[in-house]
Length: 544
Image 1 (cartoon, rainbow, N blue to C red):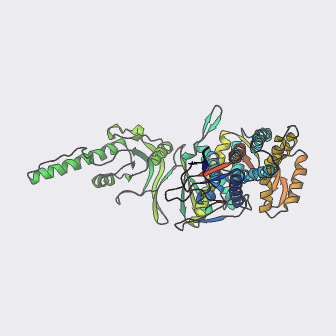
Image 2: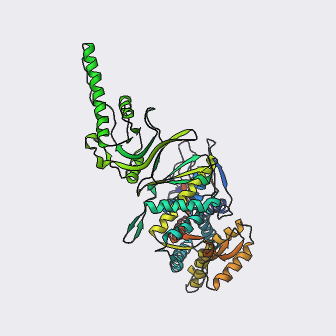
Image 3: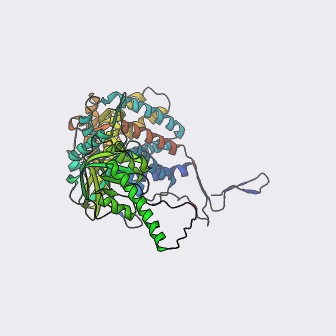
């Protein structure tokens, strides 16, 4: 394809750098559509409780085994610019609501596939985009009408939601135990406001170590520091801990400018050393006088100071991260102090037990038994590193959906039930539209049904029979009828405690529709050449 245009006098005008590539019109659309469909097909087989896992091996040989859509796409080295948009919407969904990362990609792929059918029949992409956006608004309206409010019974519903989010994961057998832990953690760090709850999931730290089994996972009402006690002479276990948080170094401060001290005799040298020791001892004395028996320092602790702290029977940890210091303050009630002169008994935090334990080959400091902590830790265990990593991802998703329901207390049935119900309502509503937007709305309804169909397909069910039965039962007015992939039947999902947050479903609809609309509006792809002349844009499919 020529990247230059002839002027009126026949002289060629160079528009792009030599080596650049351009694809226009139908060719550009087909390239983009093919890439999106390939990505959607890749993750579609991992949807639902019967979905398959993917093994991803990076350039360094590190292996990741997961069926989490966001993780799959993040670990893949995707080059195609349109395919990268699928990675972005999956990542955005994960950051915003924590769940639905596979569904959003599958739905976006289905929307593109259905749109391509209309384009081949001569429907303009902008007409399809307008129809899709109106259908998305209608879908969200329908979702709101079937959502169930959970105010006043939050804990029970949170456990149902957390269990559902883990039913598709490796940890599904232990989902009951983990859901109980996750909900306790989420409710512990949430704050009740006039309009409901507000929760910051960053206050729940997820610490993981191999060993034991997933059933050994526990909730620590406090913080686990991935550190060890700094001095061998210090106590390894302190009950009734009074905790001081120091953000300054327990060392002799160095001057900011070059300084020289002239020493002319051994006595002067000794006095200099004695003064340093006295200064360090004074620092430790201030800590002792405050009544602290546990010290967590954000910076370094001098060897001499360690000696005096050990002598005073104080357990000390150094070089804690700033985030750890913040969580410790929330968990124990301590105030982080920069100047030791300001340290007072009222600045100390409290915990029932502070102890150093050896887990596997590492030493960790457990600060637990805090009274009404606003920061807690979920300690995840598992038989191997792959299991622990996947369990951590599952716990994160469960925490996020718990937060979603706490902040917006509304749920809908799972198992593809809301998507099937929305599809039926959008088909009815499409009859009220005029022109070609009606065709786009009907295709939008077909795309929504890809979610329950994928669940049925991954469970080995007959897709055509499942869709017919699902439509028939929902037409009788039950919006919670969905696909139970475990038993291979079409049943009422709410009775099976398979429920999902309304927020997650809304996010899936919005993200998938916006991504599909953006792709549909592209009719020209111009890839500038990199240095050396090689074009940045792959031709045809997708580079991975």
